[in-house]
Length: 104
Image (cartoon, rainbow, N blue to C red; front, side, top):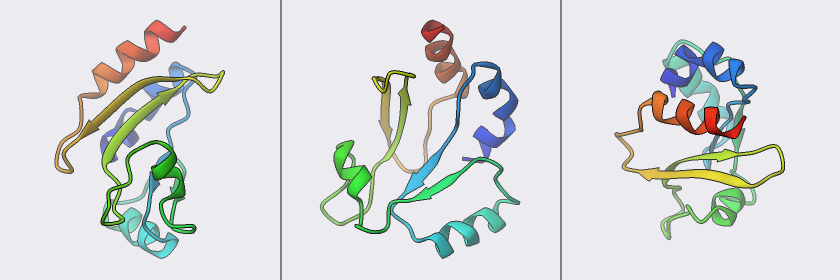
């Protein structure tokens, strides 16, 4: 997720709010932020009730961990892009900017 931090000004130019959400606790989020040198966008904890948001978006695994997934949701609340990918991978941010460009 540091790559989102690196491109934050480009996301903002598309009038986009970047949010990180995981089933981890707030103390875990704080420790992770410190380990990567800080994050300036919000990190949301889907810890209690555990995984409720991940479950609603269909990315909560049976073992209680969420899939690594990206969602682009437009201003009307419609999901316009979904990418579920292995933990060690993520799509290039340029792919996300193409989707955002088409939403204008």
